[in-house]
Image (cartoon, rainbow, N blue to C red; front, side, top):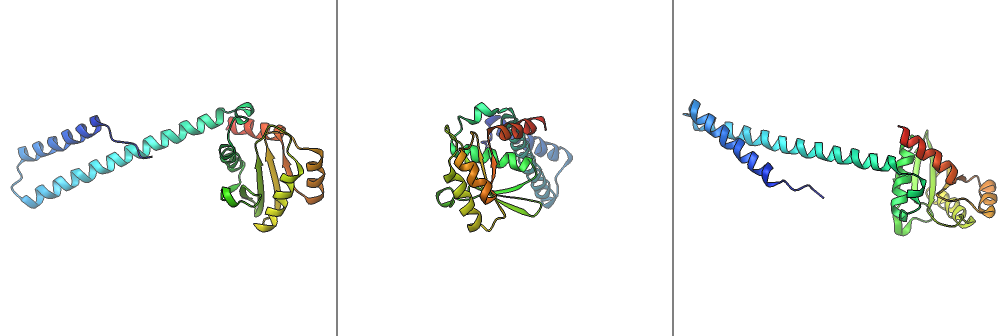
Length: 192
């Protein structure tokens, strides 16, 4: 949502314009064209200043958000909803050198994130849940891997994997990222 300009910012802008008009009147604006050009220049300068301030504020907000994400620990992740967890995992993956894009939530076909690194594409199923992740998540990632024409299926969770999930992953080449590995990713993210 765009930030609203405060009354003080609006008043400051008006005062600056009035000051320039006053200065222009003092030095003499005999030429109307020169006066219009001067006012246009002032308005353009103010407009650029406001945009610059907005960009700076957005940059600062992004930095604050980044700091909040870096301050999270594994227990905080347990309370995220599914979408928040997906976004956080995508951020961790980008930190680890992957480029990422998220699939549409309603029709993801077992894959939440497509990630690429070094020419290898990964079809990633993200599972934030209380219980160990079942083999169904591995099946979904493997099937989605084929659908999205990726090279390697992967399942990332805040929990552990069931024995069935581990067995299926081993036979299908699906990479499993469990709570312990995720913790090391978070620590690495927090250090940088």
